[in-house]
Length: 87
Image 1 (cartoon, one colour):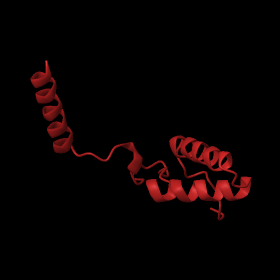
Image 2 (tube, rainbow, N blue to C red):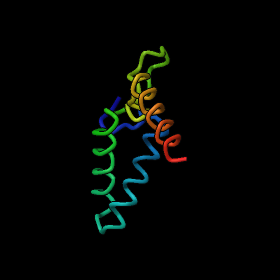
Image 3 (cartoon, rainbow, N blue to C red):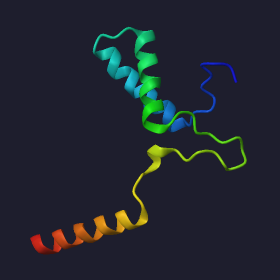
Image 4 (cartoon, one colour):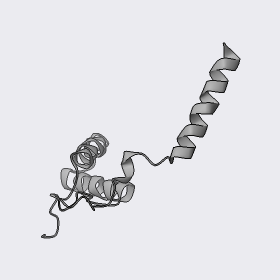
């Protein structure tokens, strides 16, 4: 894979890059620099290109959700208690 090839990125990562790039351009950053910064941001947030080679063993997209089952359960119980208390 040549340097700069984006084929290993998921569709979600590509959409993230587009959105971040637009934000940089709105702030007056040049097109090339905005794209470079956007991909650097996506790499920092998600760990780079995460598409697997088809074996199903690729790295999980870290932006897909980072809470464990226990954390989600605790948050749901806390929200339920808050809603019950405020009603």
